[in-house]
Length: 300
Length: 313
Image (cartoon, rainbow over all chains, first blue to last red; front, side, top):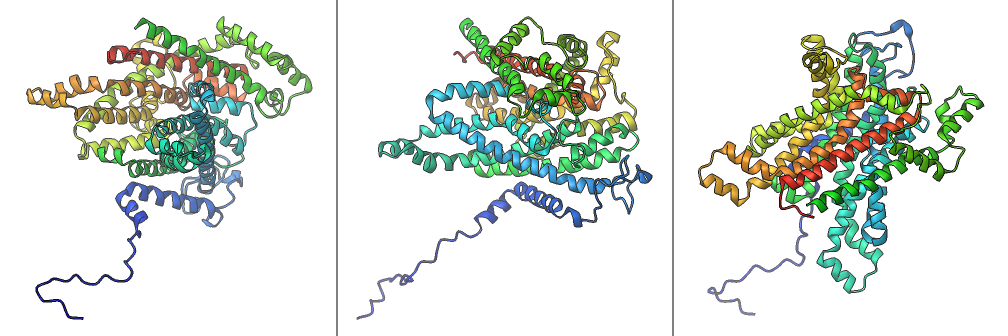
């Protein structure tokens, strides 16, 4: 075959296989572009590790009483001092992280799932929509903390009941969110197209509706997690939450309350941990909201 | 317009009916025997039986519910199991401190939050904006009782500017009344300020891109007039809405704040009722607070007519 004349430019031959489009680093890009998510996640990860490996973090039994060593100030032996029953406040706080994290995560999961189901039913079953939404309106007009208090007054104090009470208080908000997303999605052309081509409703929900509810649900779940942690602490603080035998941040503060003018550290150490944890969750939530909703991100 | 007002007022009836039904049926749907839970661990069978009769658990659900609602409509909230006093009497004895706290907080929060939100939107993207919004994230994250303890520690214990705890009735003069309420209102207002400031900023950003703002600028109108007369007025609907919704935060937070600052209000009544498992009192308080919340949001809805004459339903 004759070589082409010099005057004609020849493109370089294509390689047999095109290099794959680089998918690497989408997750990493998101983390660097949204530093708040990264910061919040790191704090939460550290707190979670702390809660899991609590027994080896130089802690003693958080419920061990030693009346002889009551109300010690923070020292090398008792990092955060001791409370009025001589218990080591540092150990109690490290173990207390377990309650906050378990309550926060459980409520976020249970409330999201239940709210998702209720919201889907409400968005797709016309006759049920009116009834469900009137019930949700009613539940939403009871302030969440009061609703949780009323529920706790009728059950025995336990972590499980705290989770249940806060979950019930949070469900209406998720249901409303899912319903509004479903109603707006149902107007989309691709859903009309799916209906026109004979796709069954469960398949439409699975393929077109559910994936699109995921982003707003994730953001909502982080906010629920933050609010559940605060409500748990409030319930424990006023004596209607986690039983006093289990160390939780709210309980530690409740016990320190009587003496806080003399020994403010007993209240301030758990308060600092609680605030830091909720702050971390909120940072993740705000970052995710900006990352998952580009319309929102552009404006802010 | 009258039709809208009437329709909106009528719409609160089913909402309150659901609240009443829910609060009432909790007694029946709670796992286990509520009479036994309320009576506590040391109760004798006679105690449990007495409570069951007081609560009417021995009679059919619908009959009891009908009676209970009928009494509610006649301002009879039942009788406290622990004290034997009418719930309405207990509530009316304690209502002043709570109303004072909520009213002072509401005014304080709106006065602080709206200018912050306007300023943040005006300076969007600058350091001022970032600082305010960072403050808002903190406001959401630090629980109300933590803010309360920090404020009390700094301003009452260390600086000794204000009283640490307690409440002085309004009848003893405005100054002592306000002095006792400043710290609790500051603590309670924190989350509320964060919420209102954020929404104000979002709503203002939306409005500031509108053409009529450009027109106002082109006319040479002063920035202050543009921001507060033209922009804020048009951003008012979402702001007022969130002020109404946020009252739920105030109610929940008031219970805790009163406990931190030893204010003898409805929050204390709630906590005492929980510790004694005095369910009629809890029922009465939940109904009352929900009613206040629904009423405030009704007022918010009616305020739309004034704020945005385009809204017609």
